[in-house]
Amino acid sequence: MAPVTENMYYLTSMRRAIPDGRRPIYRTFEHNDMLGMLCAGTVYKAGGIDDTTNRRYPFYCVVLVLKGHGRYTDDTGERVEIGPGDAIQRLPDRTHSLSIHPDSDWHEIFCGIGRARPVSPVERRQVLTTRYWNAAASRDGFAELESLIRQLVPFAPESPVLHPSAQTVLIDRLFDFYDDLSAAADSELRFLQADALAWFDTVYRYDDIKADHDPLRQACSLLSHDPTDRREVEEILATVPLSYSRLRQLFRERIGLSPGQYRLKRRMEEACAILSSNHYSIKEIAFRFGYSDPGSFSRQFKDVVGCSPSEFAPRLPPAATAGTGPGGDRP
Image (cartoon, rainbow, N blue to C red; front, side):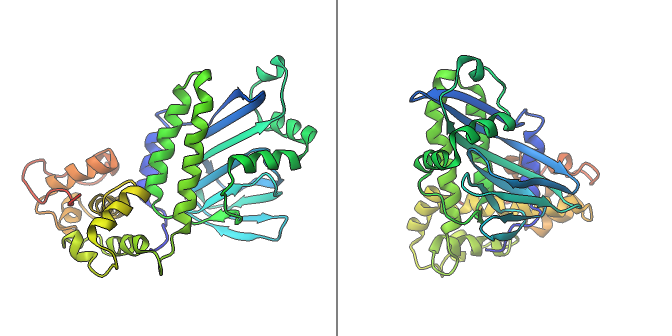
């Protein structure tokens, strides 16, 4: 599958997320006589900055980059160029740096989990800040902390930078976790640990998918190759060495969508990218994707993206609201 680059669906998700209050949140709780922590949120960073310089995080965190470019380096000699669709593991056993390109319009989502030493009631009421966590970690030592994190996240890949596919699913699931985390009572927080671990596991699973050997990755590549292709999904996937029923099952288990829903989402992602250019009218875009009228295109676009094409790109000519056209992709 081609790498994701400046995908407008992700940016639309971010644009909806920020006004809805999905700014970073940190929740702490007691679990097994230890202070527990869960965090999640969306972050926007404009301009060229040294995001992290020679730092070790005292908790485990995965950052999914939605837009922007940068460079990851660490004390093991690892050096990786970062772009949209990459996932950065903030590993507690590695001192690392992350620099963001000066012209990048950096957007990210993240999820973190951690445990530290027992604290006094006074400390427990303190606002959770990086300075506080660094102080707690330095007192206990990183070796012990790393062991605790590895117990929570035992299957984390060794590579600090991952390249997961199906990032739209990761975004949707992270937003669901964020909403649960922000609404949960203190007594319920410990139950959300499993949800955080499930999100991490999803990142690992998608990173493990190999295009040359995994039938699901082959299917995703075929469905993403030409968003204007109006053939039946089963016909497009005929060359994949699995039955269509088995592929449907794999899509549901590992991506959370049917093959038809996945193709429709990819089609609307491409439509978002074209809309953002402001070079084509909604009618022209609708016909490009095989819709018989712009009204049908607009309805499916809103179902997938959450807003109409004219709301997404208000400078474009509005689409007609009448008429019928092809329905949604076969689920």
